[in-house]
Length: 319
Image (cartoon, rainbow, N blue to C red; front, side, top):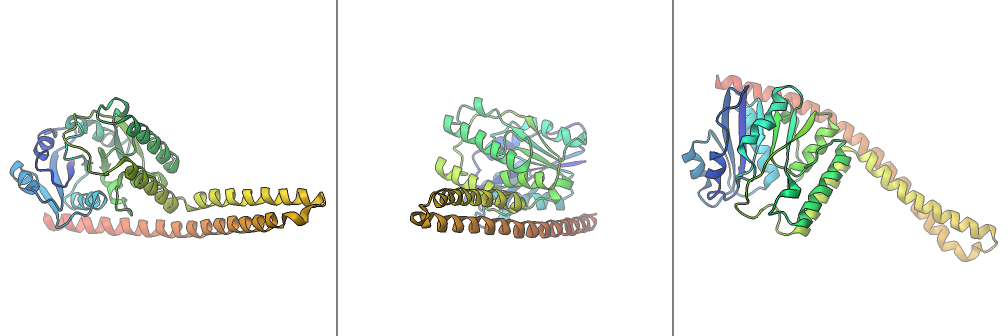
């Protein structure tokens, strides 16, 4: 059983060695532990630090491509190098390396395919009160969108079985954390969470420049994932609301019409008709989106089969 720990890096020369030294050397049930870094266009000596430490694999980007693309590149490289379990952690040593054993245990025991570390958000000192509330709210929205019970959706400390990793797809360029949970929920992949510890902050987060930017990008990511994987539910709800508003306005017009004063409320009739047509068209868009989603599921199944063949050939060629 091989575990590969992947670490996305962007100008992490100052903190990377601290994170690497914190990684476990041995875990019961794991035969090999290897380390992979994704150099996301770093301009410092991140790669030199990693190589001097003795990481097993380095994925290099010539320019910064963002967390989502880096994550998927790492997953691809880990699978090609025979990983049975892949753990993703951060280069700033945010997460306690000893807790990697907690992440992989449900996978080793055959109880789950995805395990996400639940941070003690309310007790994290360097999180502002606003960020704590937004983290909780964002996780609640993701739970509703994915039909899961993951309490800390933005957590980047997580483990994937080989089977789950092969099925991953990330469409957005911002982050993989939210979309992959919605995707796993939609594909009925077993996922759970375990409580983990966090370390003191070594540097400010680079994922977002402002709280407003974080909220905006996170909400757009969740909304897009929900529209992609559950289009009929999303557009039916939206269309139903618009249709209902139009219906209420129409009832208002009928009330005045039967009172003999309908001539003065023709605008209400026009607005009602327009809203009801828009609501119906939105529902039709949901039906079309549902058919597209069904075709996407077929393509994803084909992609999984192709990936399995591709990775199997890679492993055979290395033997």
